[in-house]
Image (tube, rainbow, N blue to C red; front, top):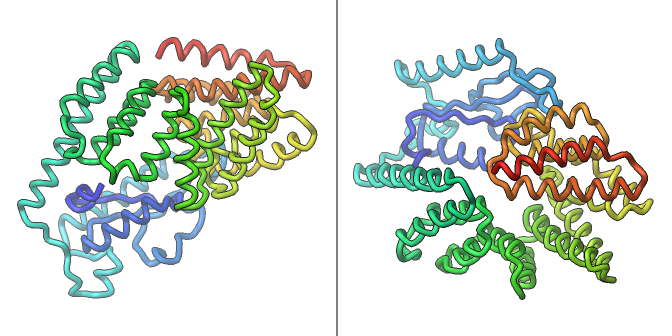
Length: 403
């Protein structure tokens, strides 16, 4: 990321969703390049104060960003394309017009001129990343997860001493093992990481995720310990509490299957963690939608009332991410689950097509399918018709077989 921010001749930054990562990257870019950075945004709300003076290009969305029918009209797309083209042509042809607030405020603010050897090193690293990703992509094209995993293991062996490999390569390999449901190999890789990377919050979260899925003796206790330590150090967050909620949800399913007296306690623990995760940042719908499903599963009056209270906030959170217009699997899957919860079968049928088209990894489908199956059982026990929901479940099962 830093290499591209430093080396790219032109950068277009979409500020619409107030994504903190985007603003961080925009700040880095503005500190190193006086011009050739083009911010854009959907005109649904004013830009934050700190960038309100930046020369940004606004564009119009049909129906706003919170509607299921959000889109960019052909006219708006052409206007946006034309405005971006003008800005880039101006940068090419001159005269130079600073678009960085720092360079506007301080005329002699020093731009960063990278030495040739550093620039070359960055370019070689980017090229190496591309080759590595080509190999990962080729491995994922194998017809089965078993064959994909074998190719990924071969790639790992060729890397040699992991302490000498850049972090981005190791993280991509870890996520590739996740994509093929190689929970044992993913866990082993996390445990083999150098200490600096093993302590990374994202790695610890994914490590706990893989331990729960692998589920060897002691794995879940270790996963809970990892997540608890994260919260002690950094406080609660949706991802950590969401994974913790998933661990207790799996414990609930297993206890329920065995008709264990511990089932209800595990269910309550899972619901509590999901709700805390959603409350820690209501912009993140992931723990919220899981809390709703489990509250419906619990089924008592108090739980159903809480589910009804959460539903609009979760709907709003996923709408902010684009809702049915999104290209992200989890956004679309959440819209689908909300439609199934509200029995909006017309909308569910429409979004189902996009969900199944966008998914690339079978574990994602299985995760959503688990929620839909749980919802179906809850609806049966509450005396509701589940024919339409079963049709959607059938489509998921077919797609899992195809992957």
